Length: 286
Ligand SMILES: [Zn+2]
Image 1: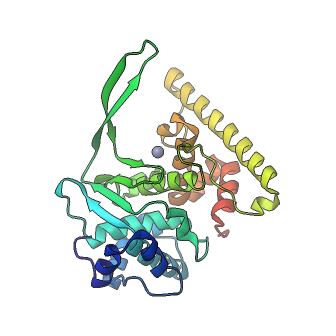
Image 2 (image 1 turned 90 degrees about the horizontal axis):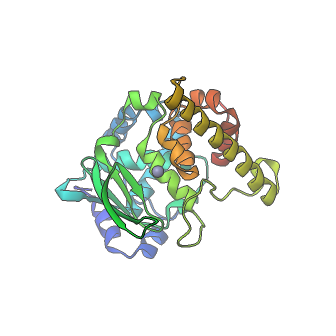
């Protein structure tokens, strides 16, 4: 942040383990979010509009701990203000809202959040079947590394009512990858199967995993089929970012976005997944 409090400055000089120890629930108030700043973020982010007063207060507490624990960096001299950092924090913490005091543990494998002003052209390379190495540049608005930082394009982080109607939210997308990667051995890619809580939907661990994989695989196959029909034969396109068809991990991240910013529409489009995500995020019925 460009104007961090003295407490935040002190925290950021400490190693990660010490910082996490200090900001664990109930020990210290990690940082104070000025009320005017918090009200501004609530106003700017339509995805927070439906939260109750108690839920907003809980989210504010999560954001305070998140801001004390994470380090924001602006790429190419982008100045990251407190308001920008708080906008990221509020969206990153929204999926953790009903997970109790240890919820931030889900994000404990990294510290850095890198903000770029806009889209980034990332260098890529791959070997084809003939053994030829190809180089190209891929436009990115966000990226999540296993055990590493989260990159976000600020141009896509700000609240946008139009994007919300379509079920888009870049921050929730990237942090959903963190949830997916949780507990996976190093080098294992995200696959759309995060660790499920004990007693998930009243099932034992293997039945819960089986139920998750079955419902998610079926929904992914159906979505890809609908998208292909739309692209090839002009049928109506399914409601969800077409990027979701890239891989099961992207489908999971895109559905998490849509779930958190447009729960009602999401429930109509993907009723089986809505039930799974309600149970996973422990979101109380409205
Ligand atoms: Zn993604």
